[in-house]
Image (tube, rainbow, N blue to C red; front, side, top):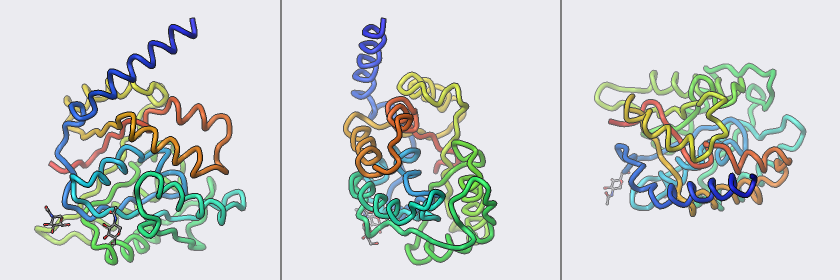
Length: 252
Ligand SMILES: *[C@@H]1O[C@H](CO)[C@@H](O)[C@H](O)[C@H]1NC(C)=O
Ligand SMILES: *[C@@H]1O[C@H](CO)[C@@H](O)[C@H](O)[C@H]1NC(C)=O
């Protein structure tokens, strides 16, 4: 029984991974200064891996930066986690110098902390100016898991983009679509399914092939070592965010 299930998954994965070029049929994100904005070290590979690998592909001529708004110090491990973020970034192909980690008293990693979107927006403004960012990639208003820090980041980036936009020079915000829980762990099955949904509602989705998937997976398992509990091994094996990212607000 398990053998059949496992073989089926491997077969589907093999077929699917031969096709990402075909499946990823969206308006490209190219010639942009891309700024990923996340809340905690490890968000970038747990949720945004496919988009990171996609925007970093040299053929798209992007300059990529990552802004992480906290050190992930909820369990007092902030220092370790910031270091791990550097390794993980390096493993996915983002130079550690292109990673900025913010340690603001008003933005500390906690399920109970309500980050003020205005503070987020101010911090984002500072970095967006430094990097001359033209497109922002961040969470949507559910923030993948409903974590309040993720949601505040989404609101703050949106606020900044609205305020900083000048007519004729809009700032694009691509928000990572949160999928319902029943789709979250369907891996390739969901990835194939979402392609159909996207065609219907005009959303953009990028898929990772095997190489990209394995790089992101390794960035999580050996980069963010301190975070690797048994359930995160399940996560990196079954979460659809490891192989497919759908974005609302995709450039047209
Ligand atoms: C790469 O992107 C930059 C803008 O970020 C643009 O100025 C440059 O012309 C692009 N290069 C190519 C080869 O398209
Ligand atoms: C990292 O940042 C530097 C300086 O802004 C930039 O020239 C380079 O293209 C970035 N690297 C990537 C992979 O985007």
